[in-house]
Length: 298
Image (cartoon, rainbow, N blue to C red; front, top):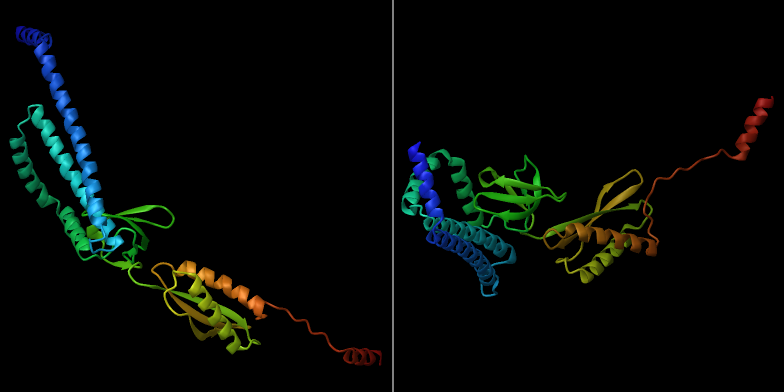
């Protein structure tokens, strides 16, 4: 009991001295200064990374540049925050050397039990190194899972893919077994057009070719000549003609919609019939009706 009273008395005496409060204020000031410096260093590093990798002398495309920028900023954030925490702990009297040594031993022990984490990091490194996909690419991850969307972030441990409906899929890199990248090569707009059996197919081909050339000249997303392939199949009352246009990656959907719109306008202008369901009622001739009436009267 006397020891507790003595300790309380010593604590009160210490709190009552000006040196204690000056020292405490100085420590708080240094901690705030360290946090501000870390924030400034993060912003400066981010700006420098973006400027250097965005410079035209760096020979990399925009997609790969965004991926490398995001990765380097993440690494910089981890390094700066780690150093800031160590500096703060050092200023409040913690033996950082012993802490780092203990963390190294603990990290080695944890590493043996965190094999999936190691696999994530190794796989993430090869994804970035081999340029399998990058930020902004439209991909399908693991065909059996049908995860498709735009890549939002590529890290050493996880990859984030945003689906067209808005949800974000967060996938550990070690679980990425197969990737289909739709953004690396040109896409093909395939349009099937139904025409009536009575139409002259050669005339239909000429109109479609003219419409394709018009769309090619007016739309910068078209990179190849229009191809009218001919009759693809037959329907109950129509023939289906197929044409194609080479487009920039992932632009074939929009180009296809524009092409269909222009084809419909051209068909109406040229008088080419677009088939639709019809019903024809056949009535017997009047002579046949009269013969039936006469036979019934006899």
